[in-house]
Image (cartoon, rainbow, N blue to C red; front, side, top):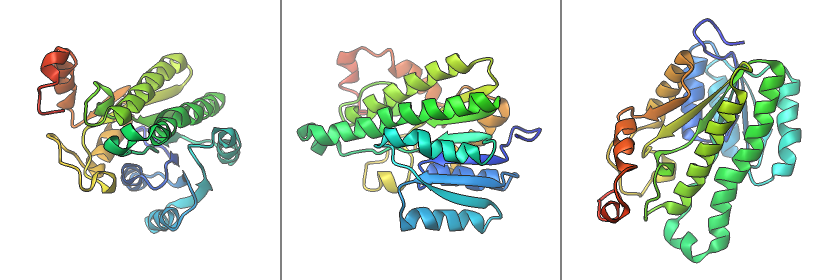
Length: 252
């Protein structure tokens, strides 16, 4: 169960090598989270991530999980929930893709969509049902401001995040009143290994800053978290800019 401050004692990370997820796990472990499952494709990186968290004092287990294999999700997540209650599920997997390449290779573009959206729909529904069965818990979904409005530079990735964001909002509405809390997190450009080599966007943030915002959102039981917070205002304005004008803006 969560403590009096809303901090989970147990955490399941779907996307166990995500820098944002690991920064969040470190922050929560420092505040009394004691059990962590890192779910991801088996790899030395996943095992190193688990070892790093164990060094902080948590009981950490790794779980083989593949976003592109939805038929396995029921079994994989079921084994975790069979071990005991899970206070928080952090849905953090996703790929950026290569826009220029993916426009020429529809199969690669579909892989981005299947990973970021359809894989998340499967895992999200299964996790939500398990949380509802136990009667409590939070499902935290890492979305992106890229899903707020299509941009020429990353509309394939952005469209997958738009679908994920809408799905998570609807899931939150469906679970309202059940004891399960759904929180959508919308970071801007995050300085991470995934974005290495890309031009930095205005209002860039870090995995640690996103982790801090997630913790605050849990304490407040927020439904939507923007990182940094000023992006809420910026995107509200950009959402209403006419397309002809938007195409000429430097954000493209």
